[in-house]
Image (cartoon, rainbow over all chains, first blue to last red; front, top):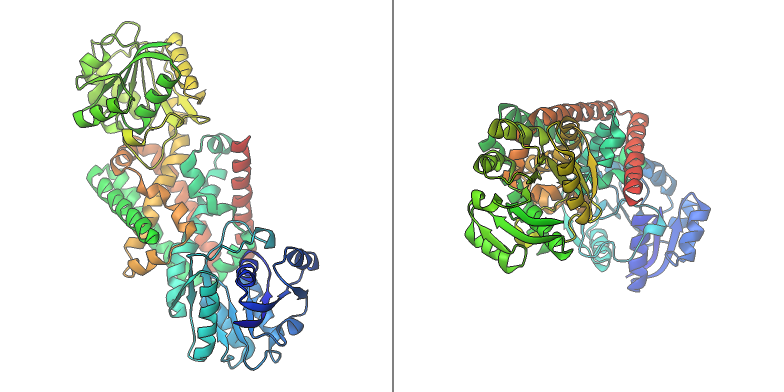
Length: 289
Length: 289
């Protein structure tokens, strides 16, 4: 159980977590914190939070669970604001998509990391953002990865895990570096490729006609391109090393494909497409089970 | 109205066309033709076709509308089989995703192209294939592009257009080369990138863990990778020139993005992502209207 849950950044991610935990009666009180009063009032009206403050100091005081759900680029200033104001038994977790950068920011800010700090990342979201888009079922059946540190207290890890399990998520633990490499490949790369595909078509003279001819395949492949540009700018910068490596792997695969098409090697093309198809079908079966 | 409609290749595309035209009472009789008897029997049982034959000669004899819905790689042999057996007033159209290659195959086969020949391409489909997957609504609101030739008789173009309009589609006409460049960008490129993305992840040592961590973004971006490998092998070979150009444009965009991330240029990243987002949102609004 959580006594006072503080959500810093009450958007899609923070708001959806608050909704489900309130619905389950898993916390006595939810305090929202953010920069935009109108946004916080909205969250209160929607019943997502019980009360709010714009002050991080006030928000974290007395909270036994602090969830930092601000964009990656705002994490460090957010940590800064709470130094010296956390309760001794407070657990602090975050939802950033790049763990190495968040941990580095926390180290710079806190000096010695609090034993209550448990970095985390819920693999959930939609291309929408903001508290209006939040809903209690967002985490149902989804994965949350925790990347506990040597400094993280086992009770803090357990409390963070229990919170996400209440939200309906499957919780895994892995090292931050492993998380960052994995997510670069499965999440950050697809996102960047969706942006790139749209940008490739915009650059063509006849781009109006081109978009007009696009079918459902194009629509699905580029759905992610509607996602929040600031959030993705932050992720691209925060997980730079792993993302560059993923882009390089991918570019090599595309270059090989180009060469196979150039050579007109039908056997190799079919083999390559079959391999992808089998893996994709297996992937869909795995996530169903 | 069509008296005898012959569908050569009764799969998702040919089967769905037969279903809707029968439903609308737009043809007196539908004859199916293909290599696999079990498959043709199935189509007859499903009521998609009235009767069938494995002989192209028999299938086209007496037909006033012949729709060639076989894979691109089988078009030429299919055309070959019908030379000298088409009725004088027969209209022949196809559904191939690469028009230049189909037209070249027809020229090689027929010598002088029949005045009834009207190349076409319905921009519709799912990642499924086969007559089991066919359904009457497939073409509702979708686009069909016809690429008539200098040799195509206006009545033949009109009859082909009317057929697709009966199926619920919007029919456009353009030059074959324009079709091929446009489709390379909006359809063939997204398909090849979906295969490439999956293949990139397979190549990694920890590919099991990677697929296990994939979220909905990955799922959407790679939906196309479940598509028929043989069909896409044929398309990649048939539309080679335009596809290589599209891959090169795209690779340049990805290389620029890589450089921007490498430099850590947040302003440029945000601008590029915003541009893609705006275009994608505009695209979705356009197809709604």
